[in-house]
Image: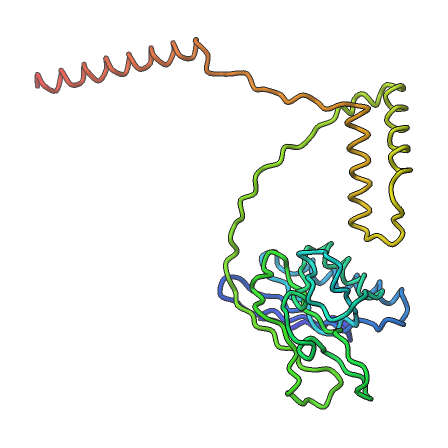
Length: 278
């Protein structure tokens, strides 16, 4: 349906699907030792491309990410345990942040294969091999990707192996999730100096007992801080009681409804009687 060359490292292809169209974005990320500013510019361009894609199109980002992703990260559903590597490099954290922000799953880590079918690149001396080519797709449509594996038999005279993706469009099923009641705190109590001071002291105290977060992922750090804020608000401000709606169907409504039913019944009887006489 359309091909768009964006930069010398990025292009996009839009194809027509059965249930919805697909936006395939092919990229080539800077290597690990390159300038950090250039990497920032690259991911900004990639984000703009994803934002410009039609709302109902499935987005698939693929090709050379130049990353290594730790298979023990446990950031499901964004990344699973079938990655090749034991640690995540700087480029890998950038890709993970992008996947989490855009709610995308790294499909190339979802399938269990032998090592030879995970390796996507080999060094010229054939002494080193890595998994640096990946496939990302919207988490909602992650199950549309049925398989991702390297094909070593395809000789294309290149240091990367051909990566085969098995893809089939399916209509997403709606998973019913039980509604979780939002907790409302009495934030108006912060207007009082005493309550505001107590809340501030409680937050400071809880932050001091948090574990060291230097090596912790951004999402885990935010979760810890959110728990501190909620605990301090619960202790210092208190929760706002749930509002119970007044029962609108009272005795007065019941009497009016009965009068209306009696009136309709009389009109129906009168109409039936007149038809019989006729």
